[in-house]
Amino acid sequence: MARERKFSDKTLYNAAKHILLNNGYEGFTFSLLADELKVSRGALYKYYENKEELIMDYMIFEMNRFLAELKEINNYDRFDSQFDFLIKLMFKHIKYIRYLGFHTRSLQPSVKT
Image (cartoon, rainbow, N blue to C red):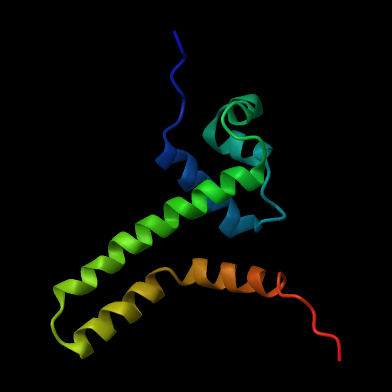
């Protein structure tokens, strides 16, 4: 009989978000995550080969949550109401936008002149 996980996806992703926002990608470690979840590092490696795999799953989770929230725009008939909704939604997630914007700039290919 398989053992039950000691943490839910939601608990795992909330802990990952906390560490990413406070320490950044480079400062994210399985040791910090395990401490926050009160499990061993081995418990994490049982489900994820490395931090990249875990963070990718977390980002997909967040993107799906954002897209579900974005669908609520259909509850507004007028353009100005939809625009207000969209702006509020973006500012609700500003920490992620700033974090992703900062790190995606470093992934851009350099241009030789």
